[in-house]
Image (cartoon, rainbow, N blue to C red):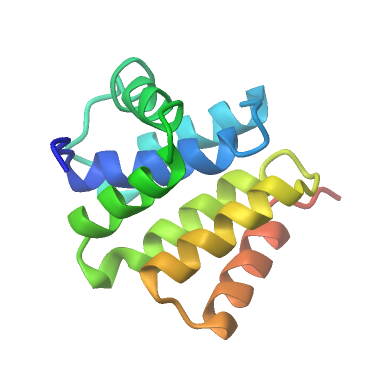
Length: 137
């Protein structure tokens, strides 16, 4: 694969990919990705320019034939196994952010889990935690 991305960009790629899975990236998803990039430790040294750089490169890659598979392969090749669950939970956070279920997003999460070799019980727990954090009173 000729593309090279950083670990932070790989995490952004999984978030953008799950948001784009239903062919629409909505405001809630963009806001959630922005807050994750601003607040979480994996992004402390990352610039706040994620949308105009990593997100656009990811969308461009997704638009190519077998784009999703290429993104997943790239993400797996860049991240260390200790960050696989981090990647998954960030994708689940973005998927849960608009408070609605999208089969395409669920399918992307399944592909991500399969690519990263994550245990089913772990993925269910991470998804449930993400969904719980996005419920309103």
